[in-house]
Amino acid sequence: MENGEMLRLFESHREAEAARDIDAILETFTDDCFLETMPLGLRAEGREAVRAAYEQQFSRSGGRGHGVRRRRRRRLGNAQGNEPRRLAGGAAGRGIVRRAVRQRRALRAGLMAGERIYFDLATLCEQARIPLESMRAAAAAFAALRR
Image 1 (cartoon, rainbow, N blue to C red):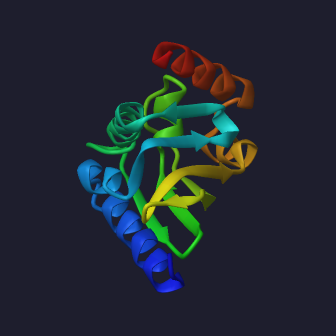
Image 2: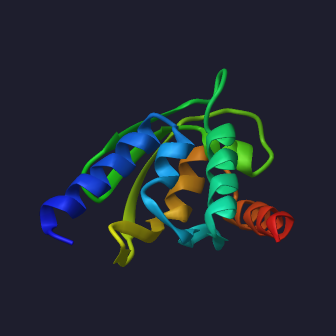
């Protein structure tokens, strides 16, 4: 795959994420794709599991009083909002700014095999005034529900 084609694929993926268009997001992935959020220890494998992960992510970070506004660059993105409180079982509250690095994995047949997301969980928890251990426990419980 040529560099220009890769960049177009990544841009399509980012645009679909910004639009919260899960079908369009999935069109950028292979059938056996994965989505992994490293700081939370969450991994979804396969198209349906990745779909469910995006549905959960978008339901947590959207809606009345707890939205997220994203600004993206090529690999580094900012998210502003208060979604971490909802994951940890709290009400929407103090806002956060999260800088994230997204690592796209190997390309096969013109599609992405998966994506890994990295961000500073400790800083995110500090901004949202959530104890780090509470967030880790909530993420572990969430991961257990998805198994």
